[in-house]
Image (tube, rainbow, N blue to C red):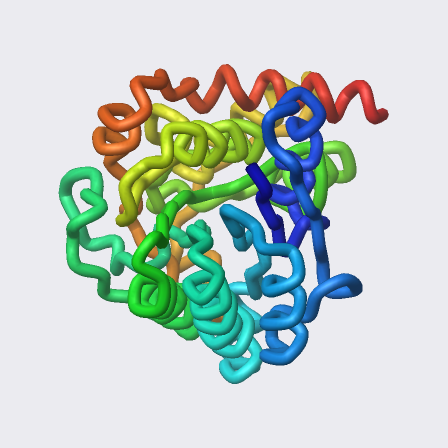
Length: 285
């Protein structure tokens, strides 16, 4: 089986690269902007036509949520138009397509975990661009799998865990938003989940995957500081006390029942995965 991974230098792409050596039955091709500009139609068509992969996992994305409010065109090009190019090229080669999406496609006004079938209602440029990307994937490739995730972190790249550890070491106290609720996701677990879906040739459609359990950003930050053994006081604040350009969903817990039913795999609890990631960060020094 041949799998093309785009955006391979990001958190998820790096985790896929790390697990690839033990997946001997799969031949991976990892690309980032230098090898393949996914916004260039000619490059996309030529590359995919020559490689003829069985699957494409699109890990590339514009993820600067607040900056997107000032750069809507850039966000839409990478998160939607490029997805359409990849999905179309994959369809022509009879190749299945995996698009990574986000909890931000929901408005966060729910009272229960969001099902994959729930209607999206994105607020903000980033959210709208990712929702449009989902539409492009479904419209242009009949074999598309869309995986929504949330609060992604890893030992690689820039993310909340690394930011809180750094800030905690530099300051004696931190204030973190406590009225936004969701589920942290270790990118290593998400990489495994993607491979699980591919390995069983899962039906096309939308799946949700995050780590198990729910918390606030405050709870998450407090756990990061505790597990990192950093001497820093973490106190709660509300969204109004920490204004940002782009709106955030207040409640964005994703229901993973469909993923579990299809794969038969258990989903790791967020705090256990966080321990593993922090152990890796401590090893890195």
